[in-house]
Amino acid sequence: MSTTQRKLRRGKSTPPVTLMTVLVDTTDARDDAARFVYSVIAALGLEFVELADAEDAPYAATIQVRGNTILTGNNQWRHPGHEATFEDWLVTTCFARVSDPTVWAVVQTGSERFELLAAAMAYAFQGDGALLIDADAAEALSQTILKATDDAVEILDFDFDLPSPHIYMLNAPTWEGVAMLLQVDRANPLNSVLLPDTLQAAQYHFAHTIIDCGADLFLAQRLEAAGSRIVHIDDCTRPLYVDLTPYKRIEYFAHDIPPYGARDDFELIVHKTRRRGSMRRWMQRGDQT
Image (tube, rainbow, N blue to C red; front, side, top):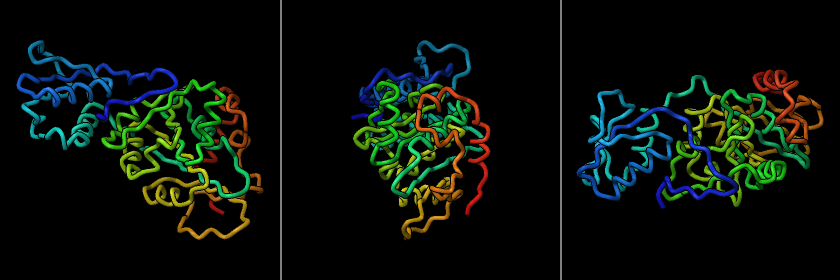
């Protein structure tokens, strides 16, 4: 299955909005290579114009396909074989990178947890380019949000054979101003070798990425090594043998979580904007204990 042939559930996806157009010449292309180029352009939400219909106008990118070789200026890629590098080039050519992106990862070790803390952290930046990722293998956050929204948030099925994290990011469904990558049946790239590519793509497109790790300290450790700010909530009932230096370490019973982050009602988090400012300040303050 191609990277761009996404299986979708729970509603229709909303393609990225863009006015950018790509000039394409597939006169001498093999059919499978041409189909791949067109499918990637469509999946990224770009428009295209055939060389025969080209006008004297600027284009975001110019692509020529000869046989199974994709040519762009001084670059060339073979199909199949170089799909990911071509997709990455097209994204970085046509889309601007956000400035100063930040990634937070929430990990909670204890008998109880603040179930919607990661969601509250994302909605604290509602409308500012926030992405919420459920990377917890237990899928607790995803199930809570799906239940609260009557399964209205779309779930993307990820193609692990030919992955394209940028395409997933640009097609991430949005719920009330926050993009979400929820999971069902562990279909999440953060639970695989795609971790570095997924983080890179998230930071390219979103100013604020919040990841729910559940109780997975080893995932949090990997995220910290990749530059994420770790928020660790612990009930301090047992030693934790992991090399982790959180950005914030909070004792569960110390009542240091802002009221907005301690809510257990998803609808209140989505619609009540009061105290979001204090939530943002709490997130930015690296007050390790």
